[in-house]
Length: 64
Image 1 (cartoon, rainbow, N blue to C red):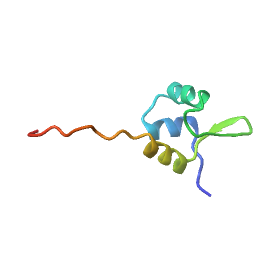
Image 2 (cartoon, helix red, strand yellow):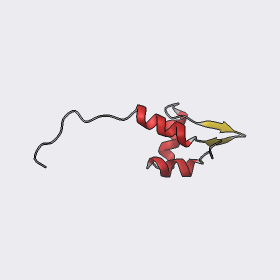
Image 3 (cartoon, one colour):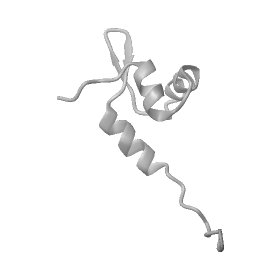
């Protein structure tokens, strides 16, 4: 079983402020786990979430 991340650890991993992660979590926009009143995050589920929400560039800038 993988180690679950706290809000602080998950926000560091994602490069977000803690409040932003709380907001995303409250809106149901990010996968989370509530355990004994604590908000926790699975690193593998966060990685999958990032991959699913990645936006590919529309075009390449040529000559740079």
